[in-house]
Length: 122
Image (cartoon, rainbow, N blue to C red; front, side, top):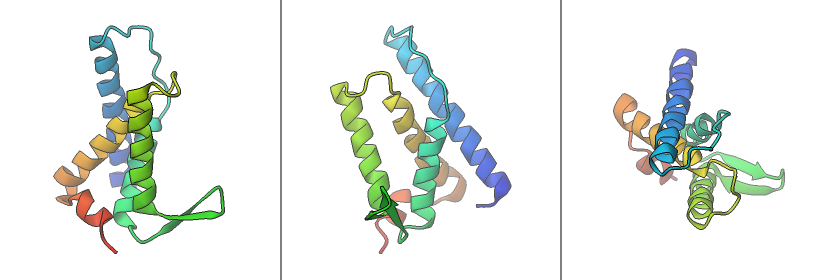
């Protein structure tokens, strides 16, 4: 990806995830939600890692080996489940999911790569 492309990717996906979340919260009359941090960008980077290195293994808690695409899909499922069922209130699950979504769009538009095809590679 390169340093400049990575910085563009990181800042763009993080900013768009935060702005998207802000407008969704305002539109749903949740005016006292505080959004801070870079979690949307971090989740976008995790998707990028899985797209670039679909065969890599990540060790959860240092002992449980999981392929990167499985980890990303699992993080997405957990975030979606937590958002829908209101688990861990105070965590911006929408921002995390928006980070994934904007990273997905970034790969489609900027690289002309469908992340789903790369995540399914073996």
